[in-house]
Amino acid sequence: MTSKDTSNANADVAALSYEQARDELVAVVASLEQGNATLEESMALWERGEALAAQCEKWLTGAKGRLDAALAAKKSEQSA
Image (cartoon, rainbow, N blue to C red; front, side, top):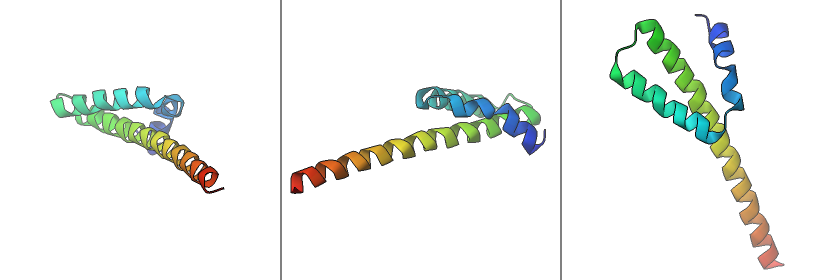
């Protein structure tokens, strides 16, 4: 499987909510930890996990930005 194939296979990750991506990531890690997959399956799971982790990070970074903005606005209101 080429990196282009992997990108296409994981394209749906961008549409997942944080909770969906996190839950699937937990399942991927559990599957990898069992060690029953072939090398090819393990690589596909690993790549899926990387895409899911990146999606979770994106959600968390966005949430942190919104919290920082809200705190800055509240601080600005209090000092005015």
